[in-house]
Figure (cartoon, rainbow, N blue to C red):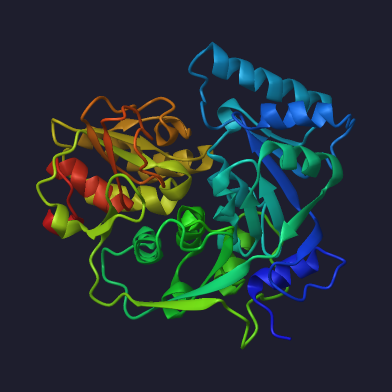
Length: 420
């Protein structure tokens, strides 16, 4: 019987025969992830379960990224709990301070997740790792505690939606636009507890960093996971990032049982922007001209990778940020930060009048380093724009790609790079 990519990966991690969507399967885990917000809750549950040891100290990862560097006593105490547990359990992959980056950029970059893996994380954007051909999904802290103790979890096998992109990519269209295109089409619950499996000639040509961006926002369509095939692009990425290059390709079978198919032709399309207060409220950037803004954020687990930094720098080079806008650039890992330094991108950002900050989630969740005040608007490369997400309940967040964010910073209102 033909299988979806989702079914194939789950089958590889289960001793039970995967025969249909909706089936419950017990699965072995490749990795379990938590961060400075969610790990303390998982540790509390771990203790309540009377567990003594994590199942594998090499396969539990803690990343202190949401409030790094810690902004107050409460956030510092959260990290203290995580640090003590990591030391007690001798956890190999504990990231804090100078080696810490935004988790969903850091793990693929360090080769900790890869093709065919099954990963759970106490963060909804764990689905990012589908960009390298892993089935990865977010779970609550109690499930994460059980995963840390047992190295197993149960899954209801999700049905899958096939999403294909065809045509010719315009100059300024990016992966962020492709995923916003989908969310705008099917809505924030259009893939509820379903896997999104991406394909088509545009996806075949898309670099892995773009795939990670798209998989990251599968959850914004309600998805359980977002998956890309394991192909030559994936293999090259693995080789570059210290993970043994897989000796296999991985894709859905011909005739796989998809619930539905969604097909887009990207030829001639302009960049898109998700307007307040939903990621599905998507409009072409040209329709938002003359919408004044006060802040731009370039970074996050969605668009804080080196390709995103290069995109933003190419737009900002030789230009100045509008005097009424604060433009905050947050490279998402120390490696990205150092590569920006080597390539002269940090100088471009600072000459343009940007604030360059540390590798933190920070403003994305309204945490710190970029909070919006009453009535303020921001263009952000992050993944959510719910009311109050980045600060005041009276503020507004517009989601866009790095090229649109950078152009908007220069113009002082929502704008695409073609307008410069």
